[in-house]
Amino acid sequence: LLDIKWFTESMEAGHPVTVEDRHTLQVNPKPNIDPTAVLIKAYACQRRTPLKHHNSFLTDALEILSQNAEYNDNEGRSVAFRRAASVLKALPYRVKNMEDLKSLPCLGDHSQRVIKEILEDGSSREVESTRQSDQFQAMKALTGIFGVGVRTADRWFREGLRSPDDLFRTGQQLNRAQQAGVQYYDDLQKPVTKAEADVISDIVEKAVRAVLPGAEIRLMGGFRRGKEVGHDVDFLITHPEEGKEEGLMPKITNWLEEQGLLLYQKTTRNSYLEKMDGPARAPNNMDRFERCFSIFKLQTGSERASVSGWRAVRVDLVVSPYSQFAFATLGWTGSKLFERELRRWAGQEKHMSLSSHALFDSKQNLYLRAKTEEEIFAYLGLEFIPPSERNA
Ligand code: DCT
Ligand code: MG
Image (cartoon, rainbow, N blue to C red; front, side):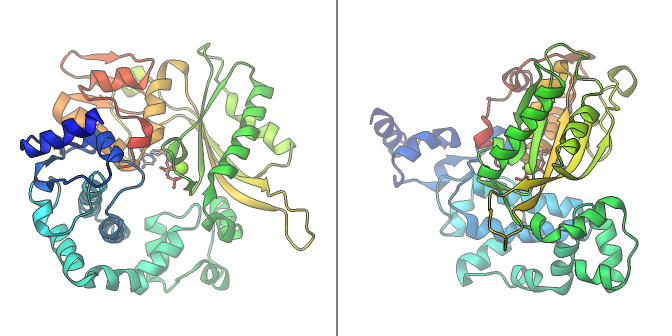
């Protein structure tokens, strides 16, 4: 109550209200918010972005345009639309008119045009025609295949292919991942639920404990941020005695394979060496941990003969040395935009280089060690944002 009183008084006194006041707002969901008094910071990693927000009717549209730009290999444009959408996710109110947007960062002309049209007409012609376009739908279907990226999908689209069925029909050459992707396409299109992620957590835990007692396993990605569904399940694995984690992945996958739990797996080895790699990141920001891309065969508990009784689920396993675990945890929690913004903040504002392995301070010319995510935020001069509010 005191909080609400303080909040109302701040508003009346014309004091700016920051997104950090969200908790106050949640106590009193319909306060008289003056949108022009809400301060939104420019980097997503400076803001709290909850999973559920007030502006899906705008962010869904902007994310279609972002997605389409990505399909057209236009990264700059794609990120611009994503940043605009992300700002709207952080707002403690539903946008009603263009005045509400006046003091907000990251809203370019194009995004504003789209928002204006939706506010005035209920939808944007550009968004609707994109959504319905042959190219957008084909790219969505083709990049939706496990193992298929934008480049390959684009080549297939130019060759006249539109769906996974077309790949079969025309006898396309597929690699092992893509073959699995086509084979389990329908299952992999279905969202993975939190309940399914929990069952997989138990399995992964059992496998890891069987081959390396004392290892620690953490559920990462969207589920760590509180999502109820995801496109896959991500895990990070480590062991408090550095070195014990070496060569762990093949042991885990062998165990899983023996139990008949894997439909597909491909392991890449850890290739990160601080001395040799330095603070620089791989160009695509991919980290270089020992990693396993897999497809699990998950029993669905259905005993009926008419139902197959299992489904395919995408699972990503990552092994990190203990000394890099805090960085790996931060890097694998997401969201993708939050991660991107953290790295941009580090580079542009702090002259530091952040990856899922390390934080390098270019001014002091040294690596900053951390045991927790909180320490990394502190090094970066950022307020700690908990995983549930990193849904940028
Ligand atoms: N990640 C990243 N940059 C990428 C890809 C991934 O920073 N280009 C990080 C952030 C999230 C984490 O890895 C897991 O990736 P995804 O599974 O693709 O994302 P997610 O948030 O877990 O989404 P979903 O719920 O759909 O699985
Ligand atoms: Mg995920």
